Image (cartoon, rainbow, N blue to C red; front, top):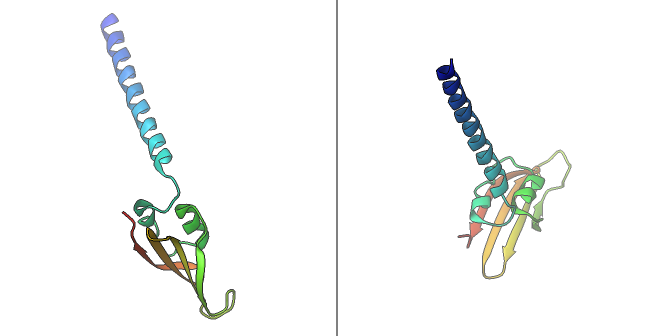
Length: 109
């Protein structure tokens, strides 16, 4: 009887250890994302994202540099936003009808 109880205790200990490892990995993944203008965050920008989603990734609003068409009209609307720091980096994002269409970056390491 004691032989089976010892095996059961060992198995339970291993299962608890595995569960603890799994939880710590998830926590680390959530903690590592920090909004900001970095190459890693630039890579997270995907076609179809909204302007607000891009702000959430880059950590700040962009500067509107150009608009074509009328927003909230039935026609085509395009907006170009830029995030930049003089002589360091520049991220340009084009939105068409409020959805990300293209991105370009210079200077992100």
